[in-house]
Image (cartoon, rainbow, N blue to C red; front, side, top):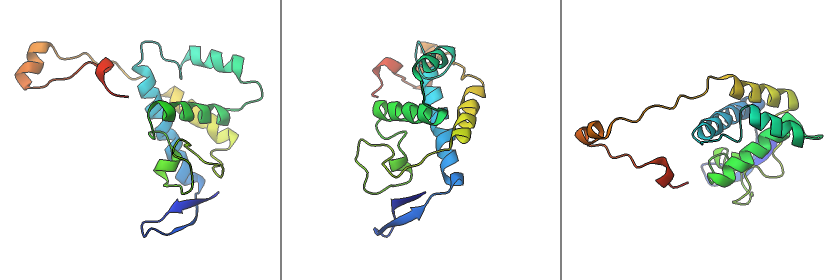
Length: 150
């Protein structure tokens, strides 16, 4: 895969991205999405319900397509957080486009493995919040997640 990447000197040139460069991006992105999804009252991207929705929707689409849809959705919700354009500093890609036309992503078997790795990890535990008196004694003020900016 050859993409226009921003070089620190400010020049732009085609830089080949090997699968070994891309796989960690997908693994980290899927893990991040899974952790964010686990914080929701009703997770929508991972788990049995999400798998059932995908099975009904998929048609001729592959695991690769599912990952791209998941990352595009995550990138739209968390601007730039799941964008290959940001991570690899891909040149000449629109601000709202996470990948660009030249992005080839994972092959189908690697995509299936990436989804399996994301699903196989233990679901993140929801920790208990410290009691208000302890937070006050420690001088910690944590606003509830519903007030966090997305």
